[in-house]
Image (cartoon, rainbow, N blue to C red):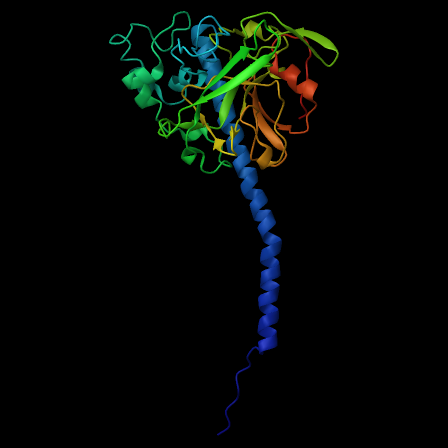
Length: 335
């Protein structure tokens, strides 16, 4: 009896098929990665819009925007001493971000300490780290405050928990300092990849003038919505809310010795715009700039709660104008 041999691949044919499959996978991977990044961008912009919506709800309730931070009085005071509650603007928005239950218990320890709320913009109370409820609440991890493209933000040690803006003396220059506990003291604090806009150099507590794009601008008009003890209203957006930055992405950066730091959401104030956007190179990220892991762009929420990507190559003057609420230099920042 004759047996008919079954047709089979030769070794050469099998190698050719494997090579073709490998080429197809290589062609598909970039498209898959692009689709994933597009989804992450969409999620990130949604997070920013949520912050914008929460801010507007807060403003509708209290007839003003939350302060950038309940920090030292008077504004511009250098620390130490740490005379302030140091609760940041994001802490004020929690009850409008599906965190109403937590927000209610946040301030329950005020009577046992100094009788002053951590939300009080007009009086100086105990630091949040001295308040048991506030310190516990500051450790809350909130997914809505993390950019999906920023991996491992929660695991970065020694987060920046304060951004302090002051002048060099005699209001001759702008100085912005980060404060971070060493030795892992603040490691338990929840992190954020979004902070409010403080404008050119926030509130220095003094009068100064700078020239931006051949336009002399006072420091007051260049301030953003979120500065120390600020009480901005809708009418504060003289240049128009849709032309003014409200929130932006912050991935953190190097402080010293190439040690990267992230931000604690509970206590950080607004981010100044004086140094522009960080370049699209991760190794050049600085903690004192809005920056992003998205290629070529940093996402922002505008004053009207819309979100948009801004190119890292945006004109510096246009970016500064977008950071100020009332300097008169209206900029669209692209699409």
